[in-house]
Image 1 (tube, each protein chain N blue to C red):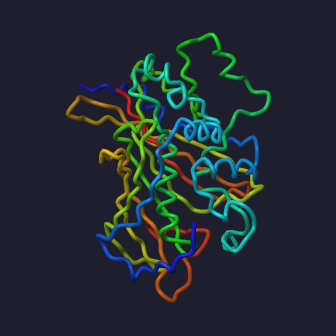
Image 2 (tube, rainbow over the protein chains, first blue to last red):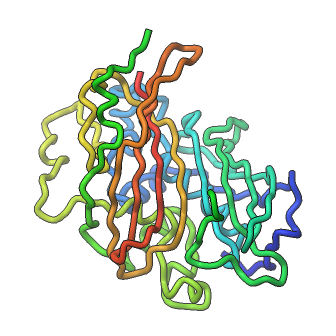
Length: 161
Length: 172
């Protein structure tokens, strides 16, 4: 993560796009490295024959758990050290298979003030090269008010949340 | 006609034992994980300015949810299924019993919701406790489905909540 200007609640506009995070093309080596890192040995991520002949899937699947990481990285890098990624929810609507390049995107859907920080609602998702959305979701991040210091850490959700 | 058996509803609220991850947050494991997700954030490497606010080197946000590994000496499912060509290699129970009345229905990943409160720091112990939060039926254009939501709390050794995950599985 590079250095960035402090993102403040006042600077955020509804409808604005977050900088796109690109990952891939994701090879079998990427998937094997992720399976090993998390010690998940589900064959649909590395055993081509099992995946296509036994499970009748179109190809080795890019793990949903890996796609989640990309979305959280997008949000984390956007809000920076002074902010906090509070919530992220995903639906796995379509499969992504090995060889695909993923474009992780976010768009500001709304903003609302809270006592100690501002909350920003973000629509999120992952597109492949064909423009197919596989992982639509929603997130809520907390960002500081200008001149008020960072979002308190550990994060405490707003009262009544 | 409902496809949700009454007996399945008895699982709602059922809570697992609190399980302790067999290893604490290890620097090497964090490195491999960060490299695998292609996010080599300096906050994950060692104590530095990037993680001063978090009290030292930390693991990526979702890392605690992947710490429940097979403990040393536990049964080895890969070897146990070495002669089974249908074994798919998957195995993650969240410590909860399978819902017997639903066992004949197929299972799909319906998505998840993550809620973050703090990072896990290098060296910290992580625990998880899960429960069946809800089991409901929903009508769709393709017919009725059952939504099973498992809520898991991942905490550090002091009991501080790190991450809460709600995983939805679809049974049909």
